[in-house]
Structures are given as C-alpha cells and as structure tokens.
Length: 633
Ligand code: SF4
Ligand code: MSK
Image (cartoon, rainbow, N blue to C red; front, side, top):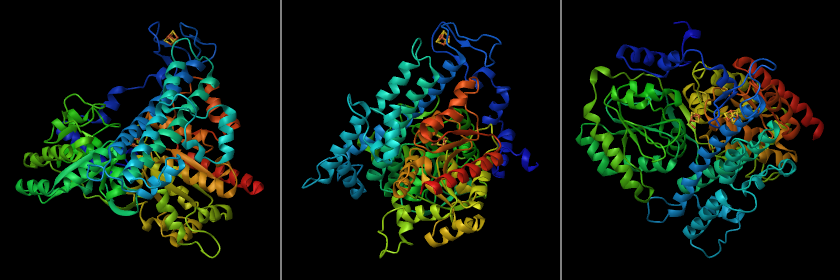
C-alpha cells in the first residue's frame, strides 16, 4: 500500500485493520465507510433540533433556500447556539471530572484509599484560597480546600478563584468583556438556558456567553482537575516509558486502562501490584500483570507511574484486535460503545465502572471511591481470571514500541530550567530562562499541540508532521491528550528527537536536558500550558496575546476540544485547527471566530485541513507576534 493510502501514519494500525477484516470484526473504518457522505447541514452547523417545531435545517447560502427556522432563527443564530452547546458539553465533561477529584480529596485520609501526596502544593493552594493552615492537620486543610473547590461549582455570588492567576492585562480584558466566569455549573446552565428556544438570537452575544463558560473550564474545572489530582495522586515528574501496541505482553495478563479520571486508574495501579493479585496471576499461569494506558487515563498513569502507553483514542478497537487483552477497564469519556461487539469477538472483558458511562453489553462493576482498593481489586481479579481464555489463533502483538519521556508538570519544567539559572544573578524556581530564550529569538516560539484523532484525517499524520516542522523551525512543542501519545509513538518525546530540531531548539534541549516535544499530561492538563504561558507573560510584563505562542488541535473530534479551543483563544492564545468545526453555515459567526474575536481577545482561530499549510500559517503568525513583541519590550 502506498504511504498516502494508509489510514494511519503508523503501519501497525493498517496491519490490525486488515486483521479485523480477515476476522470479520467491524471497526470504526467500516462504520465511517457506511456513513457515506456526511450531512451537509450538520457539517456546517445549520441544523437546529432545539424545539419540537423543528428540526429546522436552514440554508447556509444567503438568499437561497430556507433562511430562517420556524421560530425565525437565522443560520447565524443556529450556528452560534450549536457551537455554544458544544462548549458547554466540553466544559461539563472536564469540570465534572474535577468535581469527582474534589470529592476524592475530601475523603482523603492518612490510612484510607487516597492520601495527600503533594503537601507543598496543597499548602500553596490553601494559601492562595485563604484557607488557614497554621497548626492544622494536613488532612483538615485538604478537606477544607476540597470544600472550597466544590463551592466553585455552584456558589451563588462572586466569580471563580483561578482566573486571578492570569496576567493582569488578561483579567482586565475579561472584566471589560464581562466574561469573568462565575460558578462553573452556573456558566454551563447559562449556555443551556440561553440556547433554548426563544432566548439568545445574536451570534456575538452567544459567543460571549460561550467564552465565559469556556473560561470556567480552563480557569475553573480543568485547572481544578489538574491541581487537585497533583495534590492527591502526586505532581508528575519526568519518567521513561514505552508507547504503542508493542507494549502488550504475550505471557502476562494485559489490562487496558482507558478513560480519564485518575481516581480509578490510581486504584487499579495499586491493585495490580497487590501481592494477593500477583499471586493469583501466577496461579493462572501468567508471568505478571501488564498495565497499558490509552487516551487521557493513559497520560495520567504514565506521568505518575511510568505505566506504558498502548496508544491513542483511535486505537481502542485495534488494541483489542491483538487478542491478548484480558480486560478493557474504562471510566468516563472517549469510550467507543463498539467495544462491546469488538471485545465479544475475542476473550476480552469490557468492564465499565462509572454510573456516568455504562455501555450496553459491557460488564459493569461499579467503582466505589470509599473502598477504592477493594473495588479495584475486584475489577483486576476479573481480568486475571480471564487470562486462560485467550484464543491462541487470534493473537498478534505488533512489534512496534518506542521509548518516551513523560510527566512534565509545571514544577518539573521549572526544575529543568533551574539547571541553567545562574543563582548569583537570577532566582531559581521561575520560567525566566524560557522567557529569555524566547525574547532573544533562540526559540522562535512555542506551540501546545493537543487533542484527539479523527478519521477525517490520516491517523497521527497531522500531529506528527506539524510537530516535526515546528521543532525544525525552533518552535518548542508541549503536548497533551492523544496528541502526546502520537508524539510518544513517533519517538518525539525522546531526547533522540533533538536531532530533528533547529539549532536554537537543539541548544536549549541540550542545556536544559529535555526532549524537543514535552509531555504535559492529559486534556485537563492543558491548564499546565496556561500556567506556563501566563508565567512567561508576567515575567515579560505583557499579556498572553503578545507572546509568540500558539495552540494547535490538528485532529480534534470532541466537544471537549471545542471548549478548550475557546478558552485558549479567550486566554489570548491563537488556536489552529486541522479539522473544520461545524460553523461554516454562518459567514458571520465564522468571521467572528477567525477574525473579529481578535479585537476582543488578541487571538483568533485559524483553520486549514492541510497540516503543512496550517504549520506555515503558525510560523507566520509566530513571526508576526515576535515583531510586535519586540516593539513592545
Ligand atoms: Fe426550528 Fe427555532 Fe425550534 Fe430551532 S428553535 S428547531 S430553528 S423552531
Ligand atoms: S482522550 S478528548 S480523544 S485527546 Fe482526553 Fe484523546 Fe481527545 Fe479523548
């Protein structure tokens, strides 16, 4: 097969798809084909199902076809409402994830299933939130901080706490635009209310409401998810791991951990290392228990424990096709319902654990945080007892696996930067070395490459092509989510990849001892990017939008990505998309997102489905921002 015809950049994916065809297993590519041409109205965002007078499909072409829905809503209104609902859904997913972590922190105890792993970070947050710490037990402090966090979801008055972390000029912009987020749940409810029949019918006003909601994600729920996870499960530090389906072991019990919330995966890591469970694995004839992560759960456990990465969102069905996975254990988000029919073709158990994400046909073993270890042991036991049921003739483990370094929290990045600080001149513990090399032009800029996979693109091709081109042009890359896993598989998270970087970036990587593409974690951890960018802006005395920094989602697919994209733009950072969002049915709204929003936030969206052209657009924008920054400093 010629390279261009391959579905994936990674040839093992194509091998596994062929295996699926030979074994009569339906995968997403079969279903994609069966979909035929996507609905043009849906693709352009002009289909409204908000009330039962509809559904109404209005024409995206001015003056031709139905121009208004039955209630009179125009294409501008319908597109803007649909977009806002995507933002609200994405915000709810990340924020509800954070709420669960806050509850876990609230139940943490010295002798319980969950402890406080990063006391320093807890104390810093307590101080920031004015929670008394003096003379108090660390667990009392943790419980009060968790209560404050939980109140962020529904407090009746005031605004969220984390936005005060943003550079002062950014906060001023939010105040002027009246988009400082209030309570997280309130912002989501406001979008749902405003988009209901007979409410907001003004595209720009709709966007502002969506922006405020997105900020309640980036500077609210997601940031809380990151901060509290670090406190309870440990702040990540760089560690070596391996990535791709070659990490599966023929002679071990293989468990695929897939989903998002670290409360479950942390307990599974403990359970898989429990002597009683290890003994059981030996009794069934296995040499051990091999955990492999996928999607954001994969990121969470690799950055805290070095658990190997099986692959990306796109590979969830392919992993099962290897025939050696005893159980796919999932919690919430990005889980294909097709795992039921796919696992039924093999011996694999598909185990759901959350009442928020039950799947028909799966084995549901509810995970209870109060009895986390016992709960996780019961789940892992199911996997171990399934080891003897493999169908030998169906086993195929691809040989491919790649070395990667994962787990750069903000603290870890700062620690690396401290290596080059002359402590007689500058204080340690800041991002000043990064600000200095950006200012000097040794690094031309920085890019956060994030997000999912999408069968509209060749799997991982856009992620990797963009990363390679950026680092070759002295743009440092940080990455999260499934983009980070694509980078791991392509070898870009290793120090060997430094040779692919331009001279400036090479020098920085060697001095600071980092790879050119840095793994920052899961999707909620995009807030680590916000923190680093804001810290650099503060040091330079400018706003985020003045920096040569871009956000990129080359293969995004989730509503969560829409929520992220909007909070990134609202935070003053341009966002480059490789998949067109469903907004093109409104010229007016598309123009706001790709043009006018810059007047409000200093940043905007760029869209191009060709990864090379998209990268050229980024490089041009980075240089444009550099020129303006030089004049400003
Ligand atoms: Fe149609 Fe208006 Fe109802 Fe939407 S809200 S379905 S455009 S009548
Ligand atoms: S897991 S949201 S496919 S990045 Fe966060 Fe990957 Fe996208 Fe899910």
